[in-house]
Image (tube, rainbow over all chains, first blue to last red; front, side):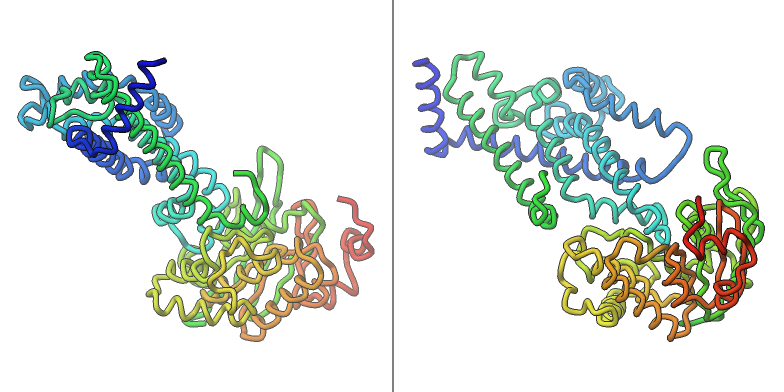
Length: 240
Length: 240
């Protein structure tokens, strides 16, 4: 217990003293996570919307596959990206192994199925309600996708948060493709793993506190977005 | 209303099945310009399906929908439909109409102007900035009329537009329908409300179990029905 209390005390001291090493790790983590989530949204939001409104042969199989990919093991993804980006791999010429770019790619691959699958689920429910009305208004299926994404924005924000959660908590893939290099590819999760191994509990706990605080802040923001976009639910006392 | 008329509308031998059960059975119907045609019948008669087939939301299993000399797709741009249950986007009252008008390829400034005018006409001018879904049931239905009106349709399909409203709200909607007719628009209205049919119909099509049993001038059919089914319906004795 004493070790834990001392660890927390030291962690807060590090945070409050704006320790440069700690904040460098936090900044890189946020950069990698946000870039990966942004990439995933660019792909996952329209793809999920398209899966919701279009009907084609193989659609069900594709949905099942994307749902299954939500549980992709990070270390396997990390290994695959490593093999692709390594000097002898097909993308070795890019020379981005052990860089934040490789970490962003790895995290985007892990997050995209989550954003796609949840977007498909959310927009398909909306499409069932809107289909006749939008068709009556002359909206094509393609044109309906942005309408559905905008109208489902509150729920989709939660989906994006789920993706961010996956990216922020991920360690297996980024440690393989990033290498956990100090001042270059060290993120919060990889640093926690490293510092715990070294016995540097204060830094590990400090990073852990930041991770948890970030999760709380993001969920608070998500809640506020939902409150703003669904005031009628609050009016009716609907449980969200 | 701009451009050449898309009327008359002819439904020729329309049949529709759902899971092997007949919904519509060889429906023939002719809709003339600047008339109110009421599709009358008990619950489950297939009234909504007739409107949806005519509007192009559902493809019939057999038969043809013919709009003057235009193809269905071109004719649809001159039509609007109001459903029994208002389907509103998760945005402001004004934005709901602007979205619908912009789908016609009209620029934003003109769409906003049209939207404000339509809201004034249905008595919702003061509620333009409110969230559409926070309106009462009657106001929501008036909003769907404003949305249809703003698109300047020649033909309006109204699917039991007052069925879920209280009498006062229902009267308000009827006044809007009368105003739309006064402007020379053609209205095709489905209802099981005999009193409403008596007040609004120029022509009448009586539907029972998916078949159009009678069609003609409303004044004639409502006073001298030719079939036992319509006679029983007028007396409130028809079993479905």
